[in-house]
Length: 106
Image 1: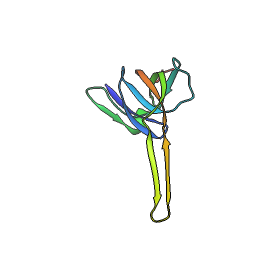
Image 2: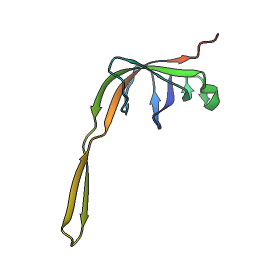
Image 3: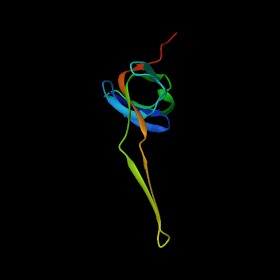
């Protein structure tokens, strides 16, 4: 069983028990997070896409925060004695997918 979810503009393949790195959330480690709605869902027998997934959501727990590897940005203009080197480390949040649940029917 797995699903595809959109988190902060990026699409991720999620499955219960997996840990994934997503863009930085302002949530402390150990807190719960709900990801809804899902884009696609596959339960092993049939796949559900689009509006049929509106009732599905995923529950996750924030594991930790961190920074990715350094990316170096180097700029140079030839014959002008201009060189500039800048580094950047993007922040991320590691979350663990606990379960994929259907909406509670009233």
